[in-house]
Image 1: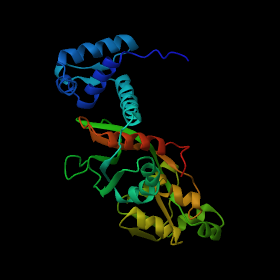
Image 2 (image 1 turned 60 degrees about the vertical axis):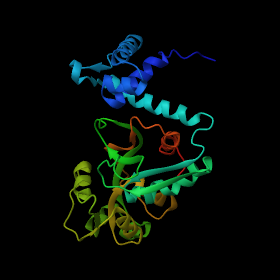
Image 3 (image 1 turned 90 degrees about the horizontal axis):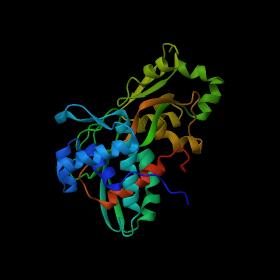
Image 4 (image 1 turned 180 degrees about the vertical axis):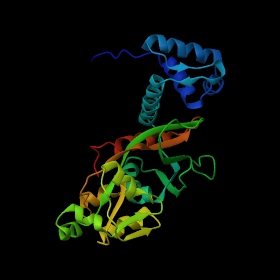
Length: 292
C-alpha cells in the first residue's frame, strides 16, 4: 500500500473550522481551543502544503483561491469519514429544505436508495424558497442552487452540476423533421425561469423568431406540458434526466452548462451523523456516472 503524504489531522481540522465559521475565534470555540492555536495550526498547514490558504487584515481574514479549493474538498472528505463510522446515522429523522421541482424530479426518485442503506432513519422533504432558510422552521439541511462564496456559518458542498436547454416530446420533434422548426413555437416557459429562452438563445447565438408562448407557474408543469406535446420548453437537465432516459423527452440541442451548482448546506457547527451520511450519499448520487 502506498502511504499518502497527508498533513497533520489537527491542522486540517483547524483550517476546516476556520473555513466554515469565517473566524479564528469561532473556529477555536468549535474545537475547544484558543484562536491563537487555530492560527498556528493553519500556518503550519500552509507550510506543509506550500501555499497561502488565508489572507487579509487580521480582523478580516478570508480564504485564498487555494484555500477555497482545499476547504470544499476537505469538508466533503470529513463528512464521508463521519458517515462511514460504525453506528453513524443509525436512527433519527433529517428534515431537508429544497425547491419543489428538484424534490419531485431528482431527489425523491433517488431517495429509496439512501433509505435502503439507512433503514432506521427517515428523511422529510420540505419546500423552501430560493433563499437560504436554515435556522427558520425545523430544516436541518437545505439544497440550493448557488455560485460564489458560502454564507458565514454555513457548511456547503457542491454535489451536482447545473445545465439547461430546450426539451420536447419525441413525437413533436419527429413531426417537425428538424429541430429548428421547434423554435416556431409554441415555446413553453416557467415563472421560476422566465428568461430561459432568451438566455439560451444568447448563449447559443440563435435568433428566436416570433412565436406563440405559453407560461406555467412551475418547472414541473412546464416539463409535463412538454412531455404531453404542447411545445418545447427550456429547463434544467437535473429536472428532466429521468424523463430523457425513459424516452418521454428529448433534448435536440443538448444542454448548456451554467456557473451555478446544486449545493448541500448545513449549519457549520451542527453535529448530526444522519446529515453527514445524507451529504455523503448526495455526492455519490450526483456524479455523472451515477445510476438515473
